[in-house]
Amino acid sequence: MLNIIIFGKPGSGKGTQASLIKDKYDLIHISTGDVFRKNTSLGTDLGKEAKKFMSKGELVPDKITIGMLEAEIKSFHPCNGFIFDGFPRTILQAESLDKLLTNNNLSVDLVVALEVDNKTLVERLINRGKTSGRTDDQSEEKINKRLEEYENKTKPLINFYKNQEKFISINGFGDLNEVTNRLISIIDSTIS
Ligand code: AMP
Image: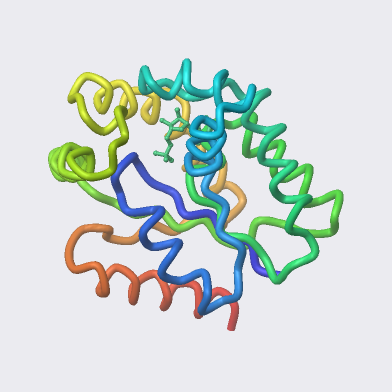
C-alpha cells in the first residue's frame, strides 16, 4: 500500500494534482474539504456543523474532522492506498492518522508539499471563486483567515513530518503538467 499526503497552503493545487495522479498509482483520493462540502450540500448534521467554520475560513474542529476521516478510510479499505488532500491540517490530526494507519499495519509513506507564494495563492483563489461558487474563495478576508489558520495550525506539520523523514517540498508554481511531473518523479523515487 502507498499512502501519500499532498500538503500545502489553500490554493496551492493539492486537489488538482491529487486528481491528476490518483489513477496512475491506483489510489483513493480523500479530500476532507470535498467531503465537508458534499455533506453541506446534502444538509447532513456533519455538513451543518462544518459549514459554521468553513464559511468563516476557519478549520473545522479536530474531533469532527478526525471522526469523518476515519469513517472515510474505513469505507474504502482495503485498497491500494490513499492520497490525502487537505488532511492532516493540525498536529492532533497527524497523530490520529499515524495511530489509525499503525493499527492497520500501515503508515504515511510520503508528504509532498506544493510551494506557492502567497500573492499567487490569493490571485488563484479569487479567480477560482468566480466559478467554483465557494464562498470561502470569494472574499480576501476569508482567504486571509485561511492563510492565517495555515500559519498557526498547519505549518507545524512540516517539522512533524521532517522529523519522520517523510517531508519533501516541490515548486508548485508554473505549468500544471510540469508540477505533475515533479510530483510523479518524487513519488517514483520513493517507491522504487
Ligand atoms: P479545502 O477544500 O481543502 O480548501 O478545505 C476547505 C475548508 O474545509 C477549510 O478551510 C476548512 O474549513 C475545512 N477543512 C478541510 N479539511 C480540513 C481539515 N483537515 N481540518 C479542519 N478543517 C478542514
